[in-house]
Length: 389
Image (cartoon, rainbow, N blue to C red; front, side, top):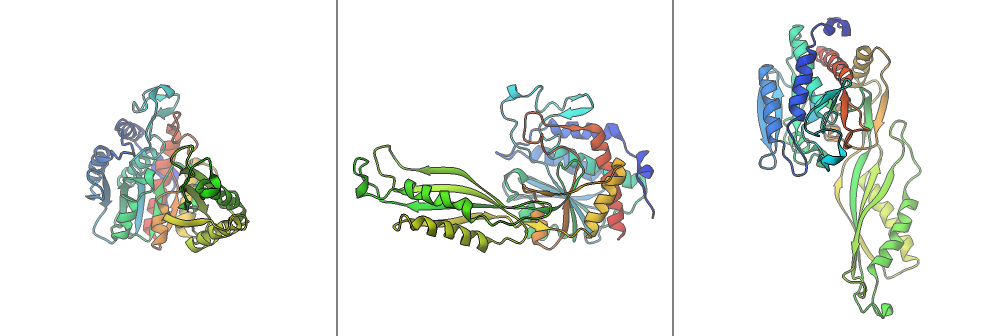
């Protein structure tokens, strides 16, 4: 079947689309602490209205993710987006109620309007369009997940690992301004732990200063960052996010811990990071041979890339371009998303959605309602074409 954006223009219900988004925005689902239950119930009801079989899955009490499937065929295409939002913060920084869903000047304002309840609303409207067009939805699956904003460990990750999301093709909804993400850096969060020997601050020669040793290591960390780059995500990066140590100003610190955010690019592995940090430690030992340091890596998210000619990329690019009336841009994510969990399990995945990532997580978060509508059309075209394959 030959489909075009014009075929769907008359089938979209702009009021329904905006009303659904507004209803979702008006339900705070902040993470932390993780208050997704009410909005999960809402999106589950929307999926049931569409005729989907729905189920809840909790990996922490009161924090459900919703899986909804059309028909009884094995899933061929999954759309995944998240229903949690970051905290709104100080309300006085907002021009209006962050959970009011105010509409003015062609935009809806509020926490989650872009990240990522806008993409969720657009995807739901896309299915409404396809149903109205008589498109067979067999093999389509929704996953509206909790916990993405705190790395997805209680949402998408366990769903994928439990075999509940097995579609070979996946579109992840995030605010990309309808650009298509085909590659993503990986978040590697590690701890440097340095031990010293406590003593009286008036006699530093009688102890071993863990903070001094940590400082020496940290000075060498950026030197070990490899000089490599990827065509769409750029190079790796490193940021020392927290540091703690010492008990009292007049006591030689016996311990120091630094937490580091190292972003990897496709091709880098956890062993590479461990080896690079060890190089920094070894260089610091050239000055302080008695350094006692170790590394712990509690979280390593795999970077990924998808080929330019993968159907999920080509069809999403084509659909986004047709919906907008201009060529769609292919980009990379320097940050992270739930897409990595699907990529780690062999799925062909891209990230795309309406909304502006530059206003996400700010007191200016909002979404252009025309773009929201174009996003629904783009999703409908991509869903239909990928299901035909």
